Image (cartoon, rainbow, N blue to C red; front, side, top):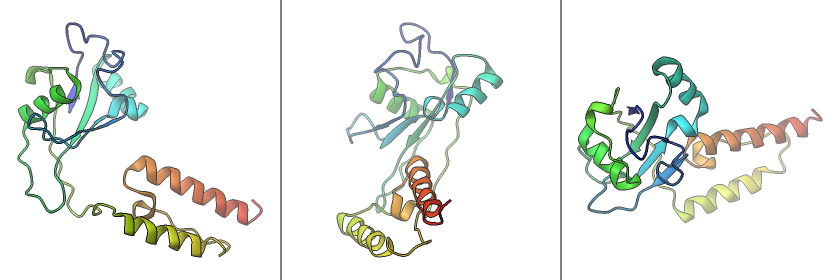
Length: 167
């Protein structure tokens, strides 16, 4: 969701350190909050913040809330539910009228939760492949979920490939 400046004591958002997370915030399941995570996209991804400022002026923010877990019924989420969860996670109350836009996106076919046994199998596979010059494996299945984890892993793999060719 895209949010303008919040009036009152949180006006300096995101400068109010500790109030609005700069990156990701994982939620504990409580009766007050159905979201499993909140990402402050305009802080986590600077290009998002720059594009929002170019389109809407200063003090506009984008948040992403994540819901649902494999094997559980799909949660019913609307704008008010999301705003209540933002308040539960951050202590900042945002009124629906302050929201410029919002969207519900379903991600079907996501990777299942990683178990310790799965982590061990991928670690062993990487260990077995390490001596093979010019071969690397990467992607969410081995690096972990999230763009940042995959990009970091892929860059490291690319660096090893370049290094193995004297590059």
